[in-house]
Amino acid sequence: MPIKIRAVRIGLVGAGHMNNTYTRCLLHYNKNVELVAIAGGSRTRDFAAEYGIDAEHDVGALLSRTDIDAVIIATPHQVLAEHTLAAARKRKHVLVENPMATSVADCDAMIEACREAGVYLGVIKSLRYRGGFSRAHDLLESGSLGTVEMIHFMALWSLRGVKGQS
Image: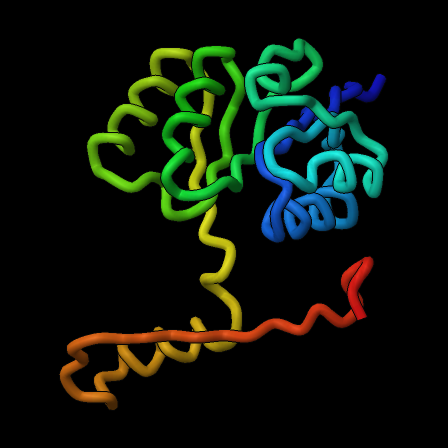
């Protein structure tokens, strides 16, 4: 008899562009995941309605839900540690957006909190393999640019094809 695997139930913290990207990937490219709820940000209600999930009034309410196993945290850099520590206290697995935090001390605290809670902590660098970033990496690694003192990278993305944009 085949073993039935329960879906990992996901909560989203933050309603910005990156959680929209993660949501589309979860829904289209992953099995055994269930998107449950979202909290955080002025677009939470619209985001929840678009994807047919629950909208929570704040991050604490989302983390208190017993039907969420893990959270994806894509909020402003200065609150990533706060949200991760709160998730660990509620025994939620965490995937946090890069940069992990704004200080080494916060990173250490996040790692320790998740270790003590017995939950996984992952950090995602979602732009690493995009064309421009990958090409810049290759140029730097090849040494063809000589000694690099500073890099300023700017990129533009088309919103064409994104729901609600033309």
